[in-house]
Image: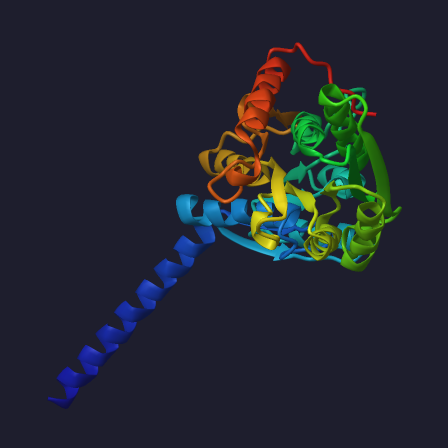
Length: 337
């Protein structure tokens, strides 16, 4: 009896160990994504959170695993990319934000066997992208033009505002196209412009955002569009205090100040992240290219849902939808600088 028991226990343990080993092999065969967030990190209710939604969707629908890093300024971004690149279990590495452009290009060259992708990469058609890097771009000017038109049509004071985060070519594109949209429908409207700073920290300063917004509201502005990451949460706070309006960015930000956010210029960052991961999963990833998302491909838009459509009059909606059609058809040229 004792011998039988001993044989049984031995077989049981051997079988259990075998299952554990098989599970380990299965886990290792999964695609694992490494993602480095932009300034502000997770919880910004905007750009970074949109990228995170893409990771979560890929986890749920594609069965991938992921890890992320929220770096500090400067060299920490490059170190974070290298940290992932040095790991054999990481299949693809994302940098989230234009500020990663130089660092991720260097990393892609240094680690040619790794796959990389960068959201809002500052693409230069005169230069060749590394063959293992895909640049993900958005036609922010198209979405910003539309929300500018909404602001120009809805202002009661004929004075609207813009609050940017870091003064940079990308955020200037938001600003200039927003101004063009305002002027397209209301050529006499005045537009006040403010920036939170000239470094990456300007995207995570709600106090500065509130200060700039209060200044504009007190100067007669009744609608402010922000493109400033976490700094924009201060703009929303100012809108609530003054009972004026704001326009969000990157994600539908209605829930941050219900009743005071007319709409948001949304970018399908989550879709871009998901689609690239799907390419890796299916073995169809191709680097050395720039992928652009605009109105025509639903890559950008303005939020119009049950939560906010009561804030946008039907005649405004009709006019803006007509403008959308003209942009897609190439009948409207939108300035970007």
